[in-house]
View (cartoon, rainbow, N blue to C red):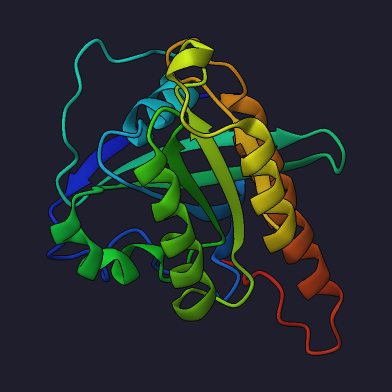
Length: 217
């Protein structure tokens, strides 16, 4: 299970990484199904660290601000359906100046992980913005997971409770996880659960009368 990584300043986001993706944000290839997953959230919540932990099994010792977007790939095998999905993970910059470019990144996405820092109330409030953006401007079938990262923080330093996050996610039909990029807690489970949701959408479309499933490459 390897991982490829590259970066993009946003100049060519609309032209790279999505070739051949259909309305589900997925496509068929000789190695299996490929699906685009985008990470959204405020700067500093740990999106890049989560992606690196999932893809490379490591936690970066120093925080580097993502400029525009970074691209990673990882393969997920779903035992429930004996399916293999290759996830194209887009790690987006969380600074305010990049918000206008966000639609370029989540266009054609099959799934999205909206990340907040459990120690930051402000970052949790931003989750509501990103969910609204995805629902109003994103692909109609995009599956969304919310991740409260930095769950390794002492409880006294946590500003958002697990119960509050779970209630919000239940009300809005979202997957909900408490994660730690530092320890790796629930990182794999998060991406696997989202991949399951994406796989369900793909299979549903393949069964639909219109036959608008995943196109072959």
